[in-house]
Image (cartoon, rainbow over all chains, first blue to last red; front, side):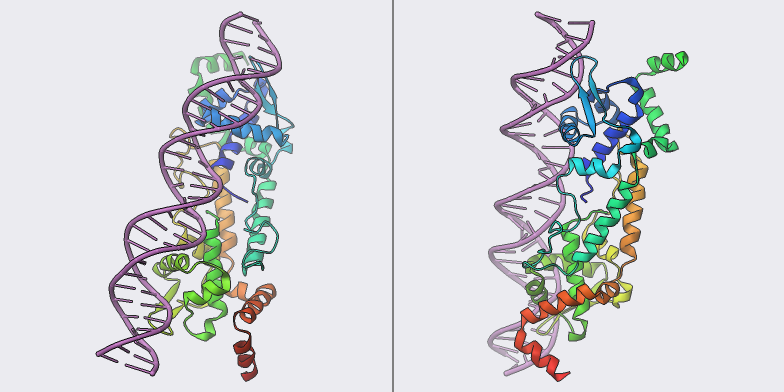
Length: 158
Length: 158
DNA sequence: GAGTACCCGAGTGTCTTACTTGGTTATATA
DNA sequence: TATATAACCAAGTAAGACACTCGGGTACTC
């Protein structure tokens, strides 16, 4: 499992989608502004996410992306796997040909570690993240910064 | 925690040291041959490992490296930390300034994951790895391939 | 038909990795 | 004391990934 900013960006963007699911399709331009990720880079990430069936898209004005299924059914590991083509901590990709055609000394260590990380991230859904108080707090601040007046008006309407 | 081939190489080399600790100082040339890692690259890795106090060196003919303390007291996490200067899964390095000067939505997720991986790798010592049957098996094959006659003679002398 | 926003491919600067080259020092042995 | 060994050290390099830009298209709404 490769853990880079790429995967972080993808998870952050997906979490943004989950947080604003009630607003209908969310445009990448919105996510870009809120999360500080370049629009074109988001496009590339969402191309992968769409191909993996994690999001669906709506074209045209008012369009954007939405989660392809509920937040309970989307796990962090799936998101990272979708954007990172290579996904394991062993160098040989599960085959045991790491060193000189034979398995390396530490082959089993890395495959254990892969399992460990993968199971940790497979146990965390977007819904889990949304439920966390810290996430709610950060999201609230981001929405405020985004459009203070509109947000107040919207809140007043509830 | 960054998990790359660099860390894998370092752990593999350290495990090689641990496996051959009884032979006195082990030269990097030997490790290079056995593990298929370039000599100069090993030199760079061992420079870091020495600075971190994980190995000690003996110069001159018959010289090489040995573990600075017993295999029970050297943990995989320490080795990886020694060769990878940057060591956490959060992009902001523990500070919460990932996105636009504020903490990113997924800040807590990555810091949890960092803890998870670090504690996993902190629980595994070189002695643990040496004790594993698969490691013994691979090491035995490597030693055989290295110098068949000498090895047989040595074994006969025991 | 104008504007929005997804879709797509090619290219770019920067960084890391893994490795090479070409040295120098220290030390054991002959 | 000469020589070989092997640690030490610094600089450079090819390949790849990352994060991003640029310049287009295409589908859709109003």
